[in-house]
Amino acid sequence: MIAATPDPPYVAVIFTSIRATATDAPGSEPYDEHGYAETATAMEQLARAQRGYLGIESARNPGGLGITVSYWATDGDARAWKLVAEHLVAQRLGRERWYAQYRTRVASVGRDYGT
Amino acid sequence: MIAATPDPPYVAVIFTSIRATATDAPGSEPYDEHGYAETATAMEQLARAQRGYLGIESARNPGGLGITVSYWATDGDARAWKLVAEHLVAQRLGRERWYAQYRTRVASVGRDYGT
View 1 (cartoon, one colour):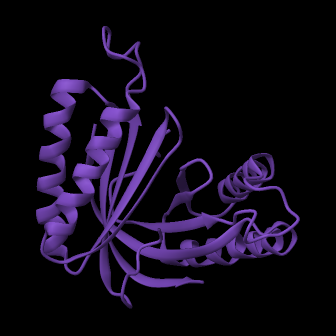
View 2 (view 1 turned 180 degrees about the vertical axis):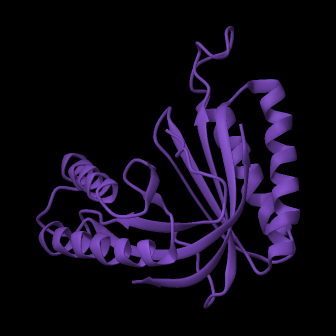
C-alpha cells in the first residue's frame, strides 16, 4: 500500500539495505525470507506504535536490495524512530547477518504529487 | 546497489507505485515484468543523463509495491527530473497501464548514516 500521508511538510526516513548472501554469512541459509519477513513485520508494528507515525512503505527485490520508507510528523519523531529501528536491526544483524550493507537517510518532504 | 551519495544536504525524489493487475487492465498480461524492467532501465538511464544526478535505488515486491528513490544535488535538479520521469511514466502508462497508483515525494536529505 502507498502510505496515506497528509499534506507536506512531514519527514521521511529512507532505509536502504542489501541482504547478506550465503557467501557473506557462512553457515547460514542464503535468503532467509522467513526471518527477514519477520523483522520487516516487527519493524512495521514498532513504527505504528511510535509517536508521530504517518505511514510506511517497503519493497525488496528478491534476494537483493530493499527500501523501507517511513513517514513522520516531525524531525524529532523521525530521530526517535531511527534509534528504535537501528536497535532492532542491530539485534537481528548480530544473530542473523541479514544486511550486508545499509544506509539510513532522514529527509524533509516539501512536496508530493500522485494519483 | 546502495547509492554512493555525498555528504548531505542533497535531495531525494521518492517514487512509490503499485502495479496494475489484470483486473485493472483488462486484456493486458498481469505483471508484465519484461515491460516493467524496460521502463525501470529507461528511467535509470534517463536519470543518469540529468544534471545533478547523484544516484538511484529501486526495489519492487514481485507483482506489488515498488519504490524508486533518486538523489539529486539541488532542488532544481530534482524538479527537472520529476518532469522527465513523470513524462516517461505517463507515456508508458497510456500504453501499458503498469501503475494502478503512484505517488512522488520530493524531500531534502539532512542527515544520513550507515555502513
